[in-house]
Image (cartoon, rainbow, N blue to C red; front, top):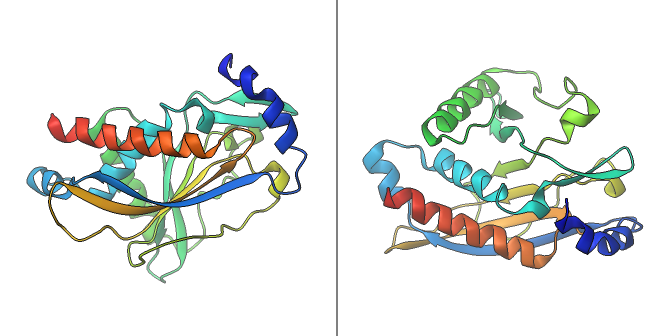
Length: 213
């Protein structure tokens, strides 16, 4: 939390806003990882999700939350993502994180199977305590869309302190790099545009590391 004290005045300013959220839509250029995944029979979506979550952990600003009038830094967060169930309705898969790539992907796949097979809307957070609900980073993927922007439903803007990260369709296979459109939303008291840049930079570095092993 020592780092946060250097931006507390920014937080105190933005928290007064009726809508303190920062929204950025960008096209990230990343190392191509689909060949790597195919060779190792890894699902590309879950590989990217793993790399993204490991990158979030590297940028403290995405880990700050408000709780009971104080700023806290979460130590970890649930894995999760949106899926379509058998009725083509939105559902949410949630699972306990793991820093081990194989275990992470296994848990992520299993959570997706449950969410797709369930008609009711699950993993909404109602089963968690208010403090546990802070241990989240919401993610969604719309692979059918060459996405350029998204507006998420917000229950209450002033208390919306959990980052939301969405991405769309990958570029066609062509060379050693690929592009992915990202839309990233976070509380501006915690996150600036620079930190979005830093997150995507870390993501590229994580993908490069994982595909070099």
